[in-house]
Image (tube, rainbow, N blue to C red):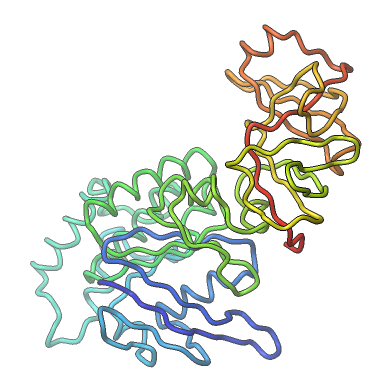
Amino acid sequence: MTIQIENLNKTFGQFNALSNINLAFPEGEFTALLGPSGCGKTTLLRIIAGLDFADTGKIIFSGREVSHLSAKERKVGFVFQHYALFRHLTIFENVAFGLRIQPRKTRLSNAEIEQRVMELLRLVQLEKFAKSYPDRLSGGQRQRVALARALAVKPEVLLLDEPFSALDAQVRKTLRRWLAQLQKELNITSIFVTHDQEEALEVADRIVVMNQGKIEQVDQPENIYHAPRSQFVNAFVGDSNVFHGILDDENFVVGDFAYRLAPKNRTIKQAGETTAYVRPYDLTISRQAENALAKGEISHIYSISFLARIEIISPQSEQPIEVLLTKDKLQAEQFKVGETVFLIPDNLSLFQNMNI
C-alpha cells in the first residue's frame, strides 16, 4: 500500500500540533518519524491510523481517501510503546484476539485461526510459548507478541509508536534489527515513531525529521546524517561542535582565526554572521596553526574501544569541543591533557539562520 498525506493540519486549542504536512510513503518502505518530544510525530501516526483526525487535509491509501474512516476500516496494524497484552489470555489467544472479534461473515474458522496464529508465532520465533501467559515472557518477547497480534489480521500498513523504548539497550538493538529484517520479508508499508536517532539511522529506509509540528527534512539515513539541510537536523541528529563566526569571500572567521573554506564547504554565497557545525570525527588536532578554526586546551582524553574521545576547552566555542581520533593516531602524536592544540576541520556544515 502507498500512503499520501496532503496539506494536513491539526491543532489542540491554541497549539499547532501539525502544520501543513505533505508526505508520500511508497509501498513496502520502512519509514521513521524522528524528532523530540512534542514535535508532532505521534499525532501524525495516530491520524494515519485513524485513532485521531486532522482538522484539515487528506490521508490517501493507494489512491483511496480514508481521512474520515475509523482505524478498523483502514486495515492498519498498530504496535504501541507498551505491549498492551491481555494478562489473562495465553500468548496464542493474545495473537488470535483480533481474528476472533471479526464479523461472523468474514471471521476465519477455528482451524484457520489456529493455523494463522501458529504461522505468526513461528514468524516471531515464539511458537514454543503459545500456551504460556505474558508474565512468563521478557520485554522483548512481549513486544514480538504485540507485533504478531498486529499482523494477525493481515493489515495493509504497519504503524509502530516507539515500539522499543520500554526495553533495555541490548534487547532494543537486537529487536530492531530483527524487525527491520522481518519488515523486508513481509514487504509491508511500515511507519515507526522514535526519538532515538541511532534507531532511525540503523533500520529505516527513509527518515522524516520533525520539529514543532513541521517537517525539517525527508531523506535517506545517510543524507540525514551527512547532509543535513537545516540547523535543527544538524543539531538533533548526531553530535556536532558548534562555532559562531563571520563568513567572508573565502574564509569562515572565528575570533582571530580565519579558516579557508574548501569548495565543497562553500554552500553559502552571502557573507555575514554564520554558524558552523563540525562532527567530532571531522576535526583534526594539530600543533600547527595553519588554516585552523580554533585553539584550545585538552581537558580530558577518554578511551572508547579503538577510538579516543578528546575534550578541548576553547574560547572559540561556547561548549567543550569533542574530537574523535583512532588510538593509533593518539599514540603516534602523543597528545596530553593540558596541552594547547589547534583544531582544523576536514568538513563542516554552514548555516546563516541561527534559529534552531
